[in-house]
Amino acid sequence: MAASGHIDTFARDNLPPGGQWPEFRFDLPELRYPERLNCVSKFLDRWIAAGEGARPCLISPTETLSYAQLDERVNRIANVLTRDLGLVPGNRVLLRAPNNPMMVAAYLAAMKAGAVVVATMPLLRAKELSYPIAKAKIALALCDARLADEMEKAKAQSPDLKRIVYWGDGGNDRLEALMQQPGYERFSACDTASDDVCLIGFTSGTTGEPKGTMHFHRDMLAICDSYGKHVLRAQPSDRFIGSPPLAFTFGVGGLVLFPLRIGASTVLLEKAAPDDLLGAIAKFGATVCFTAPTAYRAMLGKLGEYDISSLRKCVSAGESLPKATFEAWHKATGIRILDGIGATEMLHIFIGSPEEDARAGSTGRVVPGYEAKVIDDAGHEMPPGIAGRLAVRGPTGCRYLADTRQSVYVQSGWNVTGDTYVMDADRYYWYQARSDDMIISSGYNIAGPEVESALLMHAAVAECGVVGQADEERGQIVKAYVVLRPGYASDAAMTKELQDHVKAAVAPYKYPRAIEYVAELPKTQTGKLQRFELRKKAAESAARKMAS
Image (cartoon, rainbow, N blue to C red; front, side):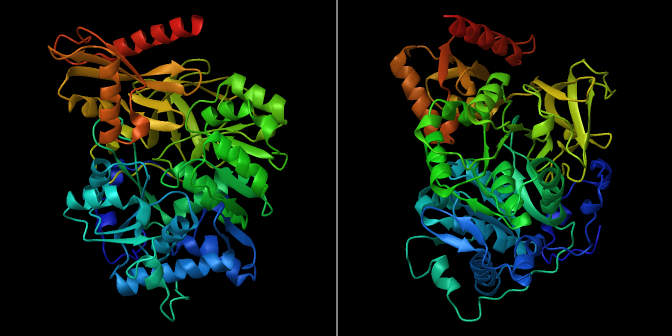
């Protein structure tokens, strides 16, 4: 590793032991980065130096920023961080906001100042915020003032968090006021190493606690120079748009890094439901869309209400893209959706094909710069046509923050993603299922054990098991099997009460849309819950529903 530019060495000190790292591949010439690198210089500074500062960059319903205007905002926030808030390179900064220009500016400013970004979703509750704050030892947060309630609750639960600076409500102590000081319009990017950590993305916590995935400055460029360059192949004239939150690596890649790498612009929507997305595509003339299969299915029935003729590329990830959705969208719009699979551990998409190579129902081929294979439980490569675990390696890869589960995800130098796949004779990959307890609903990753924990906090619940159930509209829904304590009625009122309870305890999108009351749960002789039996029950229930 190169000499770190971090003064606070927490991130580097908590990387996994070297022997547990995946093998990194830099086979493409464009993936060989210099030893000293601050990624923001390649996303922003380069365009200012090239005289392209007047190009449109960020577009939202409330404001539009050119590259030069965004650059100045980033510099002002970076100066606030270092001069007023005492940030030193390597400190972690929690960010919390909807998708808007201030969130992007704060994100880039923290990285430019040499900090490590920990971005969080607006929907998260205090309990969900307090975990990454403690795990990453975060002392400073920048937050949209509209989200202050849960942020303050999280601070009360988090001894590490010393200060929150808000923006957006006009207060004299707010970020905007601090940014106005003279001389703050310029800031020299911190002299970081290309392998200094600049982002910790927390997973959804499939089993137990969420895992912090650590990404380097070079990784932020690598996803642009692999998937962005060779599969997406967007142009500087493109205008990006999409629904994933910037706290998701799918969102920050598709809506910030990919467009800024090529000098394009992006439309940022705080609300991006299908109707919002269609209306904004028509209003702003968006050309490249990033969203989940669920959204494409929902938009199909409403295409006649909006002029989306500007659209020329559509990217899907977050859940499997059904063949029927691919074909219906192509028939209605003439656009072949670019399906892909990525992972928080890998930062972005590593399997996905460009339009001319896309096959309906298949995730696609491996993105240039990556390698993949299907393996059995012993790690042996499986021949075409046989299902197994997906393993991948390339310029990005898993490095968990101080987590013994590193050795589960990385095996013999390969990242083993937790997905079951079949590779055919033409080396196309076909998704079969998740290999773990993750539920993927409308593009959101929801950990079954986390929902179980929330349900068990209710006085009426003696036991419960949570799995995903197939659903035509959402791909999957959260299905809970609940054993009630004596004296409680298994009726509609109880179902609503439990659903509201979960919504109050964790992010509302995680609540169980279906609850089935049972006398007992299937268990092993040692008392361990057999979720595979619950998944079988859920599959039978879904089949009956679809047949009726």
